[in-house]
Length: 430
Ligand SMILES: [Zn+2]
Ligand SMILES: [Zn+2]
Image (cartoon, rainbow, N blue to C red; front, side, top):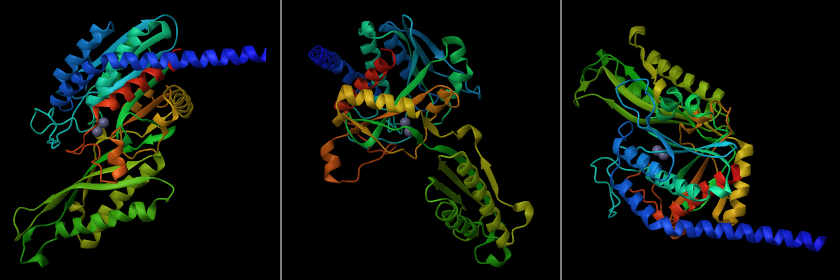
């Protein structure tokens, strides 16, 4: 009996090894065309809410693979733009439904990588690697369509526009994504990572990506001649004090065990060296995980702005304006711990421990979490490394996501992404 059991275990192991090998071989066969798809997408980036050609291409590819494609899908709250969302469904008998999401938009960055397949669109670049995500989605779609004997249930592939402005997921949900196509049992997504080795999958359970809040702060003074400061209230000096005072929100008001970032990314005021301007404008981003920390940090920014103006003697009707841009803010991303653990284990088993790592959470933000409907649907965002291990070992400063120098290594990044996402879906629909 013991021997029988042992034989059964060995057979199971061999079967798992054989199927993993088959997946690698299948990816091998597709790799040349996937690489050319990736380079084509990289060379033709489109900004958020303008992903027309990109989405047309992805939708056509998914249709050709046998998916039931609805496109374009989604409604923005501001009707100014069309929403180029894609919903591609493949039903394969009874079983759970898994949503797999890729974003599609690029950034206003002038590419400086010198790659042969660099962006052909001036001032626009796939600097966040959403071209990696789309190619991974197409590769995963191909694998799942060719392995229908290995899974049961429904796959819902999402091509999401406007992630960088955190509007796309909302637009698709607002258009009735779940009412029309059913509510998934699980939602997963993949983002590339700018310091993990190419092809390695990273996973984490819990708060995984921060909330983001966009603020416009206007410090208002009373302008005048640069040689007569006594007859003005100088907003440049107040803005300088404000920026310095902000630094204590994280260092003195926030528990060292909580994460928070307060960044002033843009500051503008004045026209000429000898004129004290009427106002200075600051554009800020705030990142936190816990809702209570988020609330307190935002309140502190407002308090400090008002206090700086008060101490400078600015009259009440010229008090600073602190404006929170509701449609550019997004909640923190929660990776369902049980689902993350399950996928982490399955991928470690199927891809090998060297190719899967439990990673640290990130302070960047995402709107993928919206698909989870406030934690109603277990959702996990995985990461895939993009960097040549030799570069990591060299200790050089690696460009981050959104950098004009960000260069993912296409292979094995795509292989890791496609393998990881395919195996994740197979685990959930086995
Ligand atoms: Zn990004
Ligand atoms: Zn991104």
